[in-house]
Image (cartoon, rainbow over the protein chains, first blue to last red):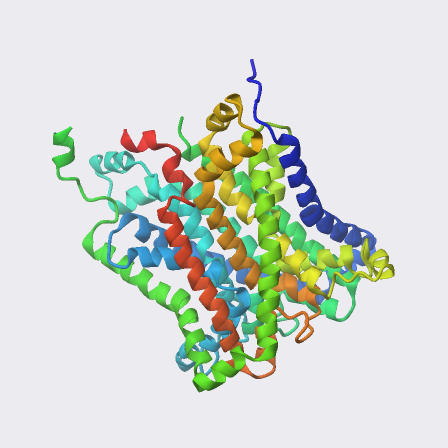
Length: 274
Length: 292
């Protein structure tokens, strides 16, 4: 028999929650969807599939893929080092991982631009090797790397902390080398959390704006990200185009949200015991 | 027992000295280049033309106005989001109802939506071409391109922050204490303030601090809805962009250093609160596992 709940406050707390979520989150997104839908299929398709829009999706998605791939390795290495090793400065490394979340994106944007501009600390060195970062797609990728780095570290870290040492010891007693054990025992256990972190990081990269617009050249067809294209359409008072392209980013965000939730549900299934 | 604990443990995977040292070395170098260098350059650039120019930028009326507006937005948006976060956490963790999982996903939506998309969405609610725009215009109420727009856009972006810190913790703590309290005759409010709140205060504070940092630093959503009028609707991040595009990079970095300082304080507060047990539910969730 179901236990009767004796706690008070459901109508008030649920009422406040639904009202706030409805007003602040659902209403605006519904208004955007409605505006995009009112365009009619032909106009909508013409806007979202125009060559400039397509170019912006390409540079956004490719840069996000590059940034997420880098963060996959760097994030995993960071989480591994923080949880498995004891060394001086470990707590500081653990703390500064959150800096990209705490630092406003516009601040990160001008800082990265200063570092990677031709005269900057990194830019002047890289230029010697013939690599240009600022005002190229590589710059977009670096801005995305910076802002989305903590996602993978922070989703993998708890799973790595809770990993049962007995599994590794069993594998070691069976004569597995470190690399084999990592590949066949540890990585499969980390995989759901790792994938959830990857999808969070990728979603963040797709929507990032503040950090990128300073370092990207913002040239149509080559270094113009989708979020910026929406902003430009707004400045041109082309609200229909802004709504249509924004709805594409919104759909991408919903898709990534669904993927993340599915992966997190899987991750919980494997890590939460009993 | 003692034989188990004194036995020399075999080295764990990845503990070979060479591998260990090189991995730590690589991570140190990358952290220095990717995370710390941007922070350092803000300070270097801000003071590159001397203390005087730094001071002039920071105490300039436009900068001070931007600081005021940023603080105002935080003073309004953060408490409202805190009340919402507490209400949402109470409803979700203390009761069972249909659609609870769906509600959780909806609360998290602002995390995955681009701030630009959020700004555009608000345009279609309160802007002239939006749902309420004509009505608001007829009654001479300005929301967009004015301070209220900045505040509600910030509220959207940071809506999940407090709730997502409280929900996992309150879920792990269960309902027993609250049920005991109410069955002994305490009112709902009394139960909340004397039983629930003391148990979640650090996580709550942690959520509030993260929420505050994000409100003060929000750029994308605010730049769509603010209209960016100098000395009127410029928050600090927008003011940085304005200075930067005015070819006043030093000024932009001086203004940015204020926000960078807030970010550093946020990190320090976060570490301090984590020592009090906030933010790391997975460790305390199942203490039985650790001892077995």
